[in-house]
Amino acid sequence: MRFEAVGVDGSKQQGSNLCTMLIGDSVLLDAGSASMLAPEQQLSTELVLLTHSHLDHILELGFMVDATVSTRGEPLRVMGSMACLESVRKHYMNDLIWPDFSRIRTGSGPALVYSSPGDREWFDLPGGLKAWMEPVCHGAGGRGFLFRSDTGSILYTGDTGPTNTIWERASEMEDLRFVVAEVSFPDRLRDVAIASDHLTPGLLQDELRKLGDESIPVHVFHLKPWLREEITEDIRRRFDNTVSLLLRGDSLEF
Ligand SMILES: [Zn+2]
Ligand SMILES: [Zn+2]
Image 1 (cartoon, rainbow, N blue to C red):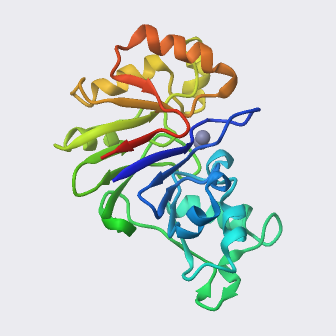
Image 2 (cartoon, rainbow, N blue to C red; image 1 turned 135 degrees about the horizontal axis):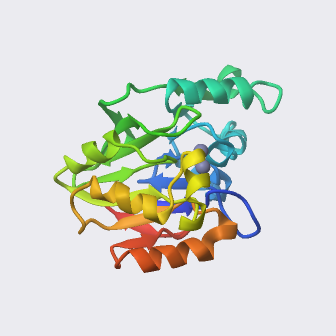
C-alpha cells in the first residue's frame, strides 16, 4: 500500500502545504492541502479521514468537494470522530462559511456523507485498507490512526501532545513498518508545545520509548514552517537516522 505525503506542514506560510496524505488511490487522510491533488486524483478519492477539525487539517476539504461534485459518481465519504464531524458541519460546511454539501443532491444521492467509526476497533476503508481510530491528546475531536494493509501496518499520530494508548497499541503490532509522528515546535518551545498539545523532538523521544523498538523508521511532520530549521537541528542532534523529516511528495510503502 502506498502512503504519499501531499502536504506536511503544521501551518501556512509561503511555500508550505498543510497536512494531507494519500493512502492508496482512494483514501485521503486530512484535507488541509486537498486542492494540491490533480483533478483526477480528487475524483478518485472515495473517502476523507479526518484526524480532527482544526483548520490546517480541513481547509481544502470544501474546495475538493466543490471541484468534484458534478462529476463524482458516488457521494464523498467523510469520516472522523463525532466531535470532529460535528465541528465541520456546524462551523465550516454550514451554508454560511461554505455550502452544506451533505444536503446538496446529485444524481447518486448527497454530494457528501459523514460517518464516524467507533474508537478502538478495526474498520474497513476502500482499497482493502483497515484502520483503527484511537483518541490522542489534542482538542477538536483529535484522533490518531493505525492502518493495516495486506503487507504491513503503520502508525499515524495526527496532532497530539504526550499520550499513551496509541503508542501501546502500535507496540503490539508485529508488522509495524513505520511511524508518521507529529513534531510542531523546537525543544526551546517545550512549554508552548505542552500547552497546545503538540510535541517537540525531545517530547517525541520520550514518546518513542513507549514503542519499545528503536529500529522502526519514524517520519516527522507538522512542523511550524517558520521554525523548520531549528526543529531540524534538534532532530539531527537527538536522533540517529531512524528519525527523518517527512517531505512533500515522499512516497512510502507498507
Ligand atoms: Zn495541525
Ligand atoms: Zn490541531
